[in-house]
Length: 77
Image 1 (cartoon, rainbow, N blue to C red):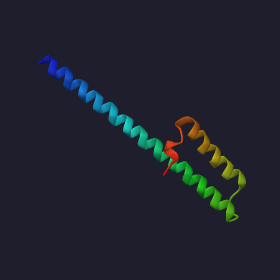
Image 2 (cartoon, rainbow, N blue to C red):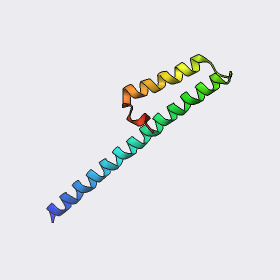
Image 3 (cartoon, rainbow, N blue to C red):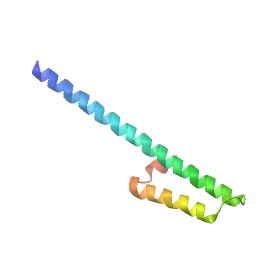
């Protein structure tokens, strides 16, 4: 009986860890997509005469920092 409970506990722990990993991936993808939206908005504002080159550069720097930290897989569509 103890062997069964040990296996069940291991299985539950493994499933919990996989779930946490998936949640982390989704959150990173959302963060990356949010940074890309901000970059696009800054660029659009600059092109329309409402934004500044510095805002575009700041947004680009944030995207590049994210890519260095998390890789660029979360920045792809």
